Image 1 (cartoon, rainbow over the protein chains, first blue to last red):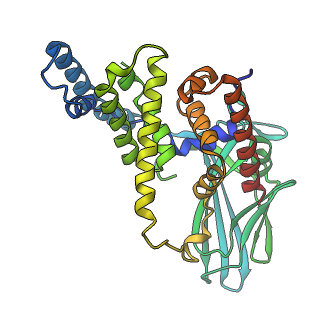
Image 2 (tube, rainbow over the protein chains, first blue to last red):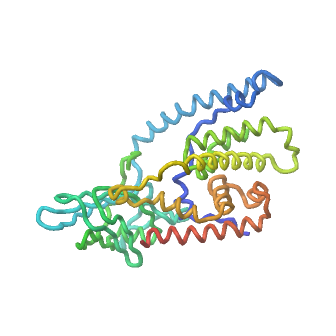
Image 3 (cartoon, rainbow over the protein chains, first blue to last red):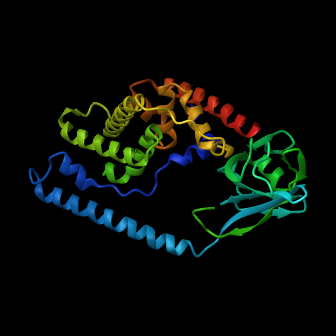
Length: 198
Length: 153
């Protein structure tokens, strides 16, 4: 019985994972009525340890975040500018963080594919000279990523398998905004600032 | 100690059931309060881990049932055109999960968030490991299809 995990599903489910909560064992003990009854020394020690963890964990997280925030993370960005008429245009920003990229003669590739086969992209659309367009989508060879319909200024996120992500990163996608089509330029690979908002 | 070492896994599973971080933490606390009060009922017939996981699942499901009972009396919010322009991946994932059976969801959450083996999931849910394997296979197939559809459009 192979107990494997699907990387695409694992990636999608990450949004509900909780990783940084400090347990409050002393509250559990208090609610369960385990104050100063049997084994008071052990319970007091447990409360002390739990309390120390509860106090130290957020402080440690702050220090770690401060330290890590100084460093950039691998990622890619792409901006596509589409002229929609006189004084009207749309700009699509694509951004993917946390995926180290390699580059050779054939373009970008993912050097580490053993643990993941899904890449998350964030996008944002800025309209200039108009409030709304009928829709926007990116067409790859075998896939269509519908961004919005109808569209105003906004953004969102989508997940692609590696082969589709590379197709997009290597400039083989086409963006359609309203009725205007525009090739998606190859991404600028590199390192991005570590930011919670990106 | 299980509570301290696996607190975030317990919270993640509860969060996947409740979609609310604070209520998830409360549910885990409820579960361990109940487990401490009823600790003499555990007779060592199964593993302590499975007994605790069951307590967490029960507490989260209890909270969800109470919350749903409250929501029934509220007017549903219809999203405006503006808010619907963003690609709502979280909403689509929630929809896809909602299409699974309760058992499929629980098996999936215990596997992906709790990092439990099939044998441990089987013990927690009181089913056979073969049932877990079949259930998780069906759930994964469904989600693969739905997540693929998200990017296919």
